Image (tube, rainbow, N blue to C red; front, side, top):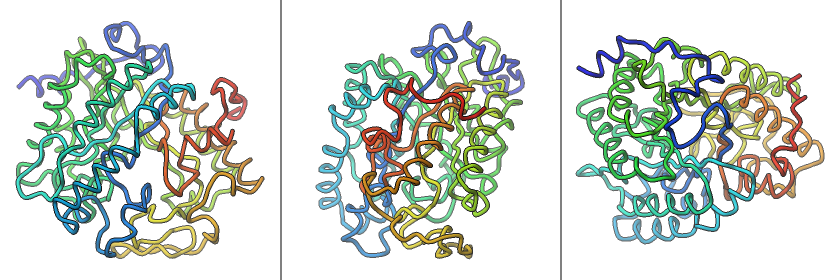
Length: 411
């Protein structure tokens, strides 16, 4: 009943830049300080394109963490994943993240690592690494957003949900199971000094889901998390970034944080833009973010301007950019060649690529700081340099220090 009353009592919060008074008890000063962070993608939730080496020696039918663990079996999967968890992100990474001028880390985790379900092939162990990472964050003065990245049944049908294929979240008991996972994250970590936010669910896919059901889930999940000095993050479900202005919480709690993901590589029209078009699009999106009545961050974005990175769209799916995309009855038309773009290093960028990626990233950072800030996807990758903050910063494509970025790029 409390959740229903909450939904009825829509918040009339001020625009994102001025909502400081009612958030004084949160662990991060949203609004007065911009979120500048990175995602620890590919660590506790596998994605084939981030760490292709884990998937390369497996059959083509292995396309996500579910099929990987199912194919390898419990013992071999546990052996390989523990090796990965122990080495892909370490305490040293948190020190390096802080040294790059960042203040936030978003950590994706799947429900199966929090509250596993009978019959799932996933293996245990990631939760211990999540727990350890919070202490690493504290030692480096970093704040953490724990992001529930995968829900039972998959909320988007993508490999980043743990299971690629049908979107069956909201069927059966899956929503209840998702809330149970969120409650455990709250009970175990809400009091940790590093945890400034918990995200209710990453990228629920509209129109595959009933949005009334999604909003009710958001309402129930946020109701369960309020009162713990947390910013309650929620994804915009790929709706217009202003579409959630009419949804909110009680006037006594303005701790809602909208997470929108701005990519310009998953749409053929955007892929066809030149660098000026990409910069203009990013700047305009940041302006739109700043009009929201809730604090808004771009919780995922990238330096990439093509979808050529190996397996970015899914193992065996192809790329829209070169016309090889073919998945679920959808295809694409040729825009340009992916030759030399499927894998590589920052050192292999041409001078034009260096200049364009630098300008594009700079524009996005400036644009998203018109609102509450940004979290880059991802901290590191094996072979996709446009997506690797660590490599881009070391290569001086992301400005170091961050304060040296040009604010004039968006006019």
